[in-house]
Every structure is written in structure tokens, then in C-alpha cells.
Amino acid sequence: MAGVLSSYAEIRDRIYQLARQHGLRVDWPEKTKSRQLLHLVDADQVVVAITTVPVRGITREALERLGADLEHLFGKDWMV
Image 1 (spheres, helix red, strand yellow):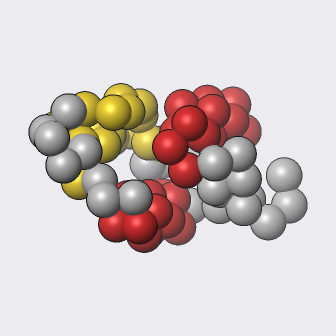
Image 2 (spheres, rainbow, N blue to C red):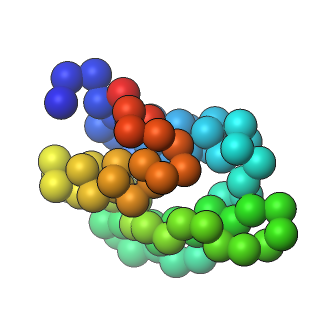
């Protein structure tokens, strides 16, 4: 997993960058100490993705799940 985004700030910044490129709005409707709920919304106000983004205690499994959850929008290697 070399080269993969690994901090919350890196992940958040990449999500915003790719969301802008794809014309999506980023919503964070809920937050806990360890993760944030993410909704990506299209121009028609349809939620096209829902996932959680790890904030603390980021594990490999959480990163893999996040990558898979957003792959259909951002492509396979969006976290690299």
C-alpha cells in the first residue's frame, strides 16, 4: 500500500479535489471521534455515495473499505 493516502487530512483533501472534478458536493452529516460520515451529492441533489472516512486510528481495512466505496465514482486508484 505504498503511496496510498494515509492521514485524514490527505484523504479529505483528495475527496474534495475529486468531488470538484466530478461536479459533486461533499456533505459531512455526522462525526464521531474516530470517523466522519460522508455523502457525495450530484447536481440533481441525489446522494451518489455514502461512506465513512476514518479520522483517528486509521487501519488498513478502513482505507481499503473507503477506497472500494468510492471507486465507482473516482476510479480504482483514487487513493494513490
